[in-house]
Image (cartoon, rainbow, N blue to C red; front, side, top):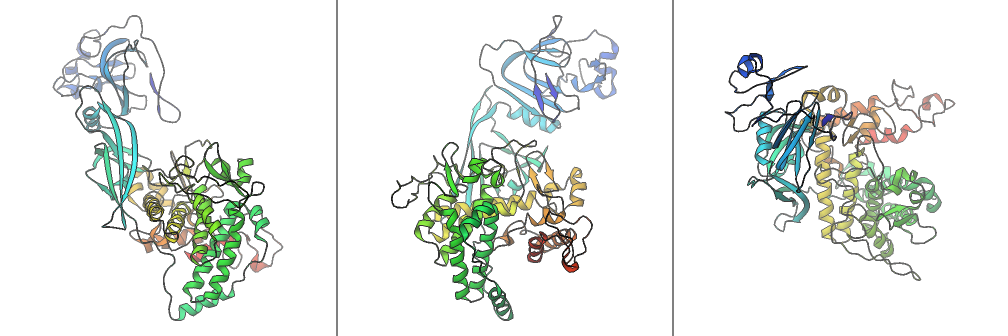
Length: 599
């Protein structure tokens, strides 16, 4: 039987036909003839021939047999056996589902139970929801061709260096001599770069309306966007201001090893980004001395994460699953935000790789550290077929490089959805999820910079493709001012929020994993502010209008500088009422306030 489960999906259970089931000759089993059962007795069925199916809930007019339609829609009556290749099922919620078989099958019904007789030959079953008559006709036309596998490929263009061609291909099988092409459904963001026709349908999903695409090969032309190290030259009074600000910054002299271990990979990554940003700011301000000092400290802070030592390395290779994980995460699956179970690898390592690219650019990262960074970047941005060697210190056997057999291709990327999933090997009630679209984009931006700095055009452009897809999906599914959430059912959510805090496989959330304040949901999806930010979630049409709305939403959730807490302002455990009145607000809001200033 097909019934509506608690989570809203169809599920199948076995069942047996009633012993007195009577098959009809070429349609539903006929009830005892009477005038009320005839289609002609009902105004809505006046143009139909045959009988309807009276039930305790009423007369289901959709079960009538219309012999003048190319495809008759039938509802199996209670206690019947019928050999057919197509069954229409109406669930308790009123939705219609179509069940197809590759050869005639004896379907048996008893009440709400649908089962089959013995299957003596291999049989393919397909099931799909039919939201309207047009969708039914579409499904009927393509019922006999189905996918058995798929592949994603990409190709750079020699004539258009800033465009990548992306391909989705499916292997298919057919039954019933079906000559129709494979039917697929495209998401809203696909339409922006899809080469070929996509037709509107009544199908929809959490991410918006779905569009029919016929064919086993989809091609996309993805603009890669400009790859910039910084925000460009600064002249005039602004350059002096920037130089003064950079000159006021003091370099931390704390030993980096113990601090990195205590902070963990994510917090260390934030600190590394700050140092990298200072080095780049000093470069733009024309202060090479400060730039080199920040860059040297950046390399020192990176060193604990790139160290190679069997006993004390902060990162290790997990040979069982195939990935680079933190030593703490390998021992404790909850450490480092689940890093040992592959949560957030692109967030974590994106900060490290970006920092390494900046340090390498300014001459502070040595060759050994560069080789280990080349291995680290492949943990989350690995193009297929890669092979690199990771040199080991003297006395160790060389470590054979991660390649496609050691690390997966683009670990977190969902090629169909366009964005990444941050979730690792943990069960989540509503499926996979990702909170910070901007940190995901930053990870691929860092990988692209690393490819550019190390003269690796394959990695550079592959990472630019990952970045372009992430940014497009971010603008479509994290911003609520786009077309994806224009439907009526999303209006209450869109009216109350500027961004989606967490996009999940089966839900959207207005709150982050760590707090409900609007400041958190907005800013965690904008940080870190780098040269890639204007082309990310903040990019696209009406950039400034969106940024103004985002700023207002984030500012409303933070306490003002005077220290008076606003209603609903974020809180944390470090709040100390004994602080001076002017500073009597959550010390943890310092970083959030600085992000607000950047926005």
